[in-house]
Image 1 (cartoon, rainbow, N blue to C red):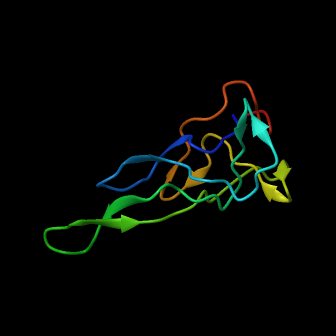
Image 2: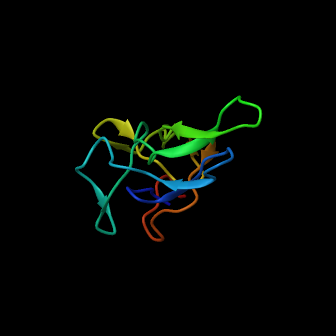
Length: 102
């Protein structure tokens, strides 16, 4: 399933375990009326534990790390549910727009 701005992902770390994608780098293609997200799209600001003892939650930024090998928007791979984002993965997307069959 194609991922879009605002779709949810697991962060893969404590403090904030789920967040959303922020504004996509390319804004020309939509899925269900929502801008499609490409590799490199920022993840919404969230927190991650630091190395203090005990750990404190500090601000953290990340991106969508992966996308389709051959479905591109503006020459950049279009993200899909299951693709790597931050230290986790995308968990929501379009229910009826598929990229490479997923």
